[in-house]
Amino acid sequence: MRNHSDYFTQTSVEQVTEQDEEIIDWLNRALASDPRTTESLIMIEVHNGEVVLRGETVVPGVRSAAEYVAWGIPGVHSVVNQIVPHGAAAEE
Image (cartoon, rainbow, N blue to C red):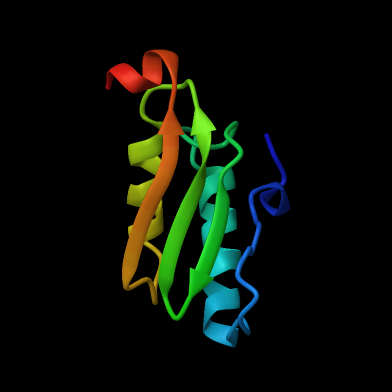
């Protein structure tokens, strides 16, 4: 199982608010503990409650599971899912 800190990346150069940091922390933990996403490297960007998910996956279901998990985090207002499926995952 990955450590929850393996998921995070904040690519925005803008100031990260305390609420955004909380969303990042909760989302990192949730992705790390969800069996559907625990083995995937998902990069996260949050700005004012807007979450962007990035990464690539060959595992079916990871893309939709990550988005579902993100919507369950308090303070999230929108989710942009830019996880790119390959192979069997692209056939979902």
